[in-house]
Length: 292
Ligand code: SAM
Image (cartoon, rainbow, N blue to C red; front, side, top):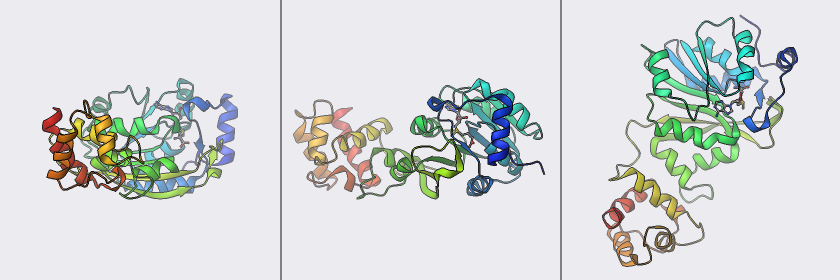
């Protein structure tokens, strides 16, 4: 077996060899603990017939572990300076493909079709760049990729919001947006000391397993997400106040909003944070005829 990339000594040697300097603006905090990496990969439950997609391979610390535990790894890296380094560090592994691209601009459907032919279990596994965590996760879900799920490192505070249950302080439109598509669970809390350089925030690993069908069936997805965002616009306001101030012509349509709330038996005085995803589904369907 080749020597692991993710040790402090080897990482430092690689960085020195190439004179690499970290770009904070790209969220470059590399993992230097092989045990943590192995545990992250364990949570993805890969087999020798799985395809793994990585976002931001850095110098290849996680890519290497994924290459050892899957049929093939496809990694998207925005920073061109890392390409020659990855070429070198991952040279022992044939089953990898690095694409020099911003993941937010990449055609991931096309890349999957080209690189993962014949593989029917695809997981995204990543130590995400923290400046852009939520847009990346939302793109992966909204693009409706043929993936089983996502296991990723991110800021603990964001993980808490993603996995939050109704009635808690962290529950909000992000929890609903992600739990609509997936079953979300925080699986690891990770100390700052396993990164080089150390980030300013605490980290966690979250596992998102895609639902076969969304958590609720709604008449119009876009309107459903609009209603959930509107309901949390000001957390201390009641549902009725948020809906009348956020929905188009909401003030003039107060009677209709009240009628919709009554129809689905939701007290207008409740706060958005107390509603389950099913209740938001029913509410948005009841409101939809008045706003379509
Ligand atoms: N996977 C490596 C590890 O765990 O050590 C590096 C993780 S580091 C937190 C994030 C990586 O994402 C960096 O390599 C950074 O250059 C890359 N990156 C940042 N923004 C990106 C984007 N929009 N698309 C693709 N890669 C990005």
